[in-house]
Amino acid sequence: MYGFETLTPRQKRILQLLAYGKKVNEIAQLTYIAPATVRTHIDAINDKLGSSSKIQAMLIYWCNNIEELKNINIEEII
Image (cartoon, rainbow, N blue to C red):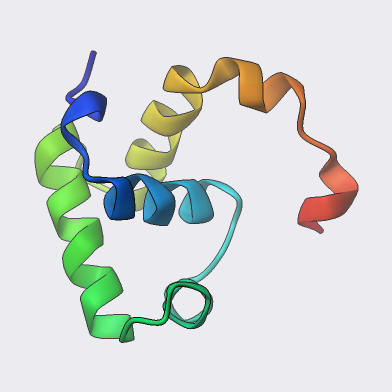
């Protein structure tokens, strides 16, 4: 299952924020960590998931959280 279960809670949260379209600097502000730390987490996420990009990691996120995808209120994202 792509190693999704091996992600730490912090990595899952960062991946979730990426999947919802947040940028690195926005994620840093929301999680109270430095942008460089966010990038480090993204690298670790890609390693654990075997993904080669943030986009691929986001697709893996949505495949593992399909119920959440069904319940998205697009107006909350925009």
